[in-house]
Length: 334
Ligand code: BYC
Image 1 (cartoon, rainbow, N blue to C red):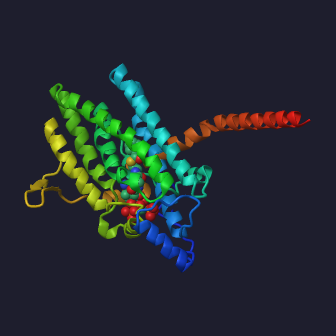
Image 2: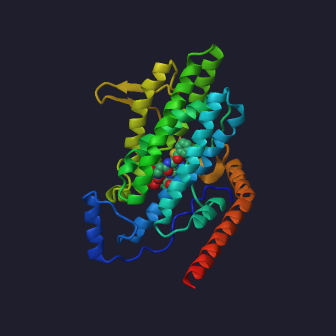
Image 3: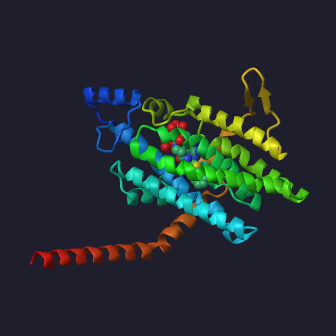
């Protein structure tokens, strides 16, 4: 039941769309026009976006946990302040994204219920543990680095509310990546023990970060349609390669070694080539068998239950304000 369920796909039969409307919609997408919530859209476009945007929102929310573990253990006041503000940003990103999803006619409660019931996916990367302080720097450098690589193109995604949310998110992600790289640089240039800690974190996070981009193009079931509809602007493999090409020189600059004996630079193509990714590990994590899947869901459910009083209080306050407003309007009308 803790599995990031594989049954999240909407099994409802596809609606038969009006061919004239569909052709106009496809032409809009091909022309790079934005699709707005009140525009006509095929049901499959709406479903794909609800799936992707909500998985993205859940990732931001669950993504706070591996870092939250280190707020009380950050090595200085400065690092603590940075970490807290980064985590707050991630909560904000979750809110922007849930709001973007809501414009597609699905409620935040519904999406949250799917997450709590283990029916919704969130990024595989957040099922790995943060064992040392170096992991926090490495998350900023690599996880946020991978996130930006994937998310910059989403600023131009075809659905208006999603693309506008991504513009703001990417500005913040850029700061997250830089602070992470700087934190790892301090360790890599520190004592031999600190450098070893940075190397150990890189060893553990490198391969899972490459998996963040999703399955290889040949088996990515949604890519073809999502690229035609300009939801995705680049394929999973293309973005993964961009990330590798940007990150390998950064690791070398730090004096760290990428944990891949097959890594080599191809002079002819101008790209770094990597060894085989363990896609069985990726499938295990998606099936709920990663190192921290159960813990992440347990903590999320507890946080939701512990926050019940806040939701009730906010609702009671909103009702009180609405009653006051109504009473004032009645009085003014007398
Ligand atoms: N983890 O056909 P595919 C962040 C699923 S960063 C889990 O290629 P698609 C953050 C996929 O959902 C992370 N599941 O799918 C950073 C699909 O399953 P369903 C979040 C994955 O959608 C720092 C199936 O595999 N970023 O937020 O065309 C701190 C087949 O894949 C993963 C985003 O969500 C994975 N890594 O492409 C805090 C970016 N990869 O739905 C937070 C937006 C694939 O059929 N999302 N799957 O059951 C995207 O760009 C795309 O959805 C993906 C996948 C590239 C991730």
